[in-house]
Image (cartoon, rainbow over all chains, first blue to last red; front, side):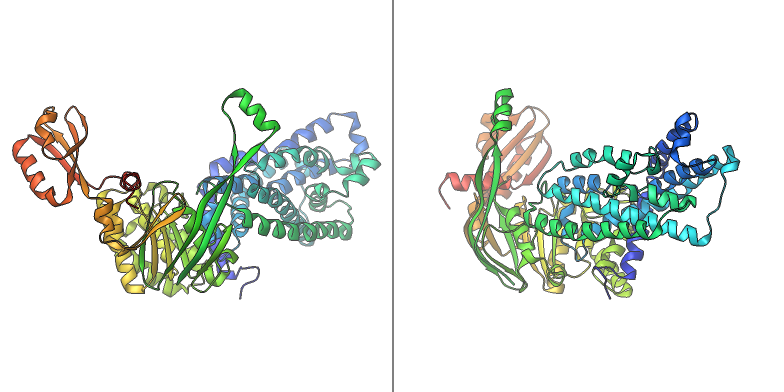
Length: 265
Length: 324
């Protein structure tokens, strides 16, 4: 039986092939994992600043938050718009459109394969972090870890759908990735990569909570770091964003395919 | 199996004048014009037929193929393939067709073809044992062996094309749309792909619509041809007659030991090009054997090759002469 065009065999084979594919690029992926150290840079800036006390995270809590932010980011990075744009321009999308499987599943599998490849590198960086700052070491409880894993996975789903929405614009404009760059600044600012959302003025914080950005890093990172967080509100917001984005992606996709002229094919 | 009635496709293309002023004008006031890529094309193809689709570059062949497989939507007219409307791209329809494009690939570049074949088998719901048997049979026909376990990027163009064909045919489609499947392949690989397609058609009774730049592909495989020019269908019928009409001459390429004299070669055919030791002659089909024998006897020939002139030249010549 197929659910959304998938069954267990397709999932197994797609994930297996995409993982094998991503392993071919392991050196590049290791560099990507290394290049995502912005949270550590921010941690060092905040640690040396008197403003640290205003962040609302005392002692090792701030260190744990930024390490969690790094880990969450590693497993929710999305690049579908760039891959999709290249495939559309080079005509590689055409064979995918002619198979009885929604092409977006291939990109989902590619992302999951990439995350699996990233895992040892991210774990290594976390180990180095603990070796340098042993006082920050903690292990989340199994329940806490599961919740953090779920929140990270939902963050990935939101980011993937959001970027897929932009990617479907490739059917109209050949360079839709420019739009992705446009949303990168609010993402960095409001997601919690630069500072926990609690550090922001109440007005900004209230406004940010109506965007998807805090649910991409800040919320899952707090869950992973074991900080007090409103789980119902956080998960509710994540599911609500998925419920808004998913139909939009599907409708835009259908309209886009109607317009598709198989560029370059 | 394939029904096409009054098919049209109009593309809207942007028009921009060259230079800085043209760029500015284009930015401020974008001008577009409509291009009729396919105009009022009608034909039908019976189950099991192998039909050649001929036309110069930009004639509308690929656009028509893409409309037949549902990749692009027609601007007008009606298309039915295997009882389905292609543009709806229903899963049952997609399981019945395949599109092979000579210059595009579906195989994962960094992995062996076998990985992509496993994905295709799962996507099309082919049981593992059946998929293994089909892979074995098709690989035998295509003379593929350990190549299936080597990364695609390490395969030659011919091996890659054969692996692409295997991937495209694993689900045993009833209708094959082949767009330049032998493009860029050497003579041996072309012949092998042709043999394979003929055998596949014989074994499975699949319907095949084939475009090619090589006349030899069409003559070897397609008893019937469709000829399209500037989006309009000009000929729909048997290849016999049209082949001679299209290519009454064959091209003889000679490489001589020393530069030849045009006067000495003029009597053997029409000299298309002569540069140093290399000569390109067009020789009437019925005189080919005799002319080649005489050339070998009278001139110090280092290399000799006989081919059909490029299909664009043949079709262009036909239209210039007003023969279609």
